[in-house]
Amino acid sequence: MSEPVGEDASYEKERVFSLVHELTTAEQRESALLELSKKREAVPDLAPILWHSFGTISALLQEIVHIYPLLSPPALTAHASNRVCNALALLQCVASHPETRTLFLNAHIPLFLYPFLNTVSKTKPFEYLRLTSLGVIGALVKQMDDSDVINFLLSTEIIPLCLRIMETGSELSKTEDVQQITHCSFSIWFGSHMFLISHRG
Image (tube, rainbow, N blue to C red):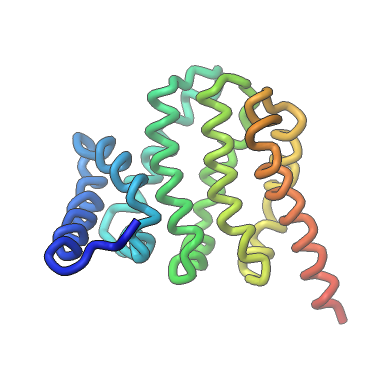
């Protein structure tokens, strides 16, 4: 898709800023999440905009924490899952951007996703929630030469969680997304150990 130019580009940028601002308003947040999640690949500087805009990351974390009570006993609906997955898609954007990745880690934001990865329900809303959460972790895994990423992942329980998902996931994850999960867990394990070996002595 070609990038907008001239007045179209100016309008598009203003639209993005407007949507980011709407994230901080509860009544407008759901539609803003949906639209921004669709635009995330078309706006190269969306991650810095999200990170540095007042209240935006807090709003995304509110979306995550808001559904914790629905995890156990499992009561997550498709609508609630889609909404929080849109928030996770924006966090994935932040996790993958070189300007915001370290800030993302230093804030320990991935820890907010671990309750999602720790669920065992095999319904589609939970499956999509786990897979989208893994997408955020996967964005970090792609930067295995980053010592901050490796040290963070080594200090958390992400590997056991990934392995549990491979063991208990439903047919959805075992068919369509098993490669993503396997690559995620193996890349963390292998990259972390190679990093430790190269830095011995």
